[in-house]
Image (cartoon, rainbow, N blue to C red; front, side, top):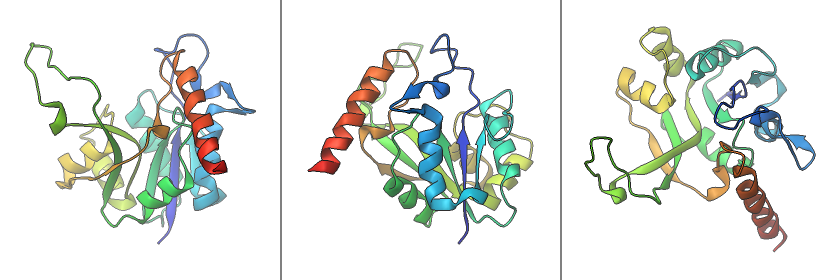
Length: 203
């Protein structure tokens, strides 16, 4: 089984304001380098691409994913897609997704707020998850789905796999270390999680 990895680092950070969040310094490295270095230690230098760093990104997330898929070696069997704005992903989490036999696999967290539709109707919070990144897929099936041209601006590849192949993802509940930096105040939350993880390792 040959693994590949794509790190999405081409975003414009419009909600963050000012500098691109993936380029911010965090404990001696830019944020995007954390997920890149962690994934590279598992898949190898020749099987990883940082879209937006190694190669230019696309106008949308979907286009950046397609660019990343096309940049990987053609004999990759399984690909993991990581978000540059989630720097605290661990090697164990990456291995868990890559080694999962399901063609579509993702991490999730239970919702902490009550979701409501824009028309004012409610859904049961306990019936829903917050879907996270990274996610892992059968490389050839994901390439096939995107090659269809049906998907233009998707926020999630598990939906692409479901709508094209009918494959539901494996959902794995995980810890809060996959927190995403979106707004300026999120760096303080990331800092807290970072120190919590270091303390847990030292115990």
